[in-house]
Length: 341
Image (cartoon, rainbow, N blue to C red; front, top):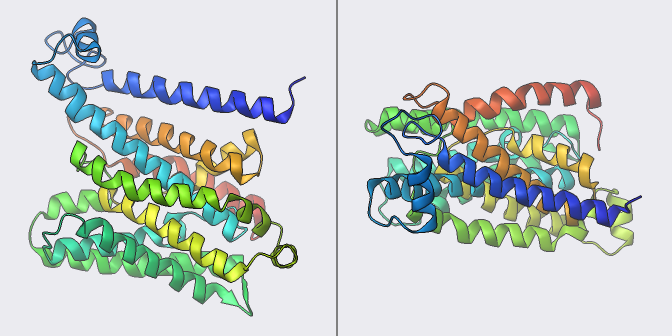
């Protein structure tokens, strides 16, 4: 019988294989083929010629490597960000229903991104920076509102997050209407989508997401202690308030950058940590990377479904994740009824 460490290794092997399989297969799926295309589209032979490097000049190469692969990488980065952010928030708040969407971080980031668009700021990194600042403001406002007597109450946290999210979404909608341009694109962006995907966007998003994810993983032991309660954490020498603020800042960074380039995509940070917790347990040293891999896999498939299910029309990927996540959230509400993990 396998011990826990061995079984966890097999879970990671399976997740890594599933991610590689997902990348290869979703590169094939599209209106041009080889999967889902017509007879005049990309054949399997043409696809493998591009992947193997034998074809370095055709239009097929641009479709597969520049359009599809950059979008797959961006979907993977956003999935990692949202899953890691959700895992972190569930640990910080000891609340199984916390995620960037429900707590209002995504709405805060969308306000920052909308401000960048509204002011037409030309600075290359204005979008992720303002999205991060918006997310940071939102998470600390919700945290401050929900803290009663030095403790964060689950019911207050959820209600504060929902109220803050609705308020910030109204501000975003107002700013979008005031722009008077790109309205159709911005409305679809607000619903969640990877329309901005390009290798330049991937290169811009990767460093802050990597920095935030590595930073959160560095605090994985602190997260384990926080889930035990405030008193055990204090006894073990953890500065609870400082640790929470650092983790919330890092969470705002990864979630804010993700929202800046993908819009509001809900429930990824809610679903993935729960599924991975069943497979690898509650230890954040294994739960965080497992959730990151699962988040990447899930969002790549969700985006592939969104762009192909009613092709040539493309659905916002936020619709797909909401269809999966909303019933899951209702299930958790009925199961926990305001309890903690």
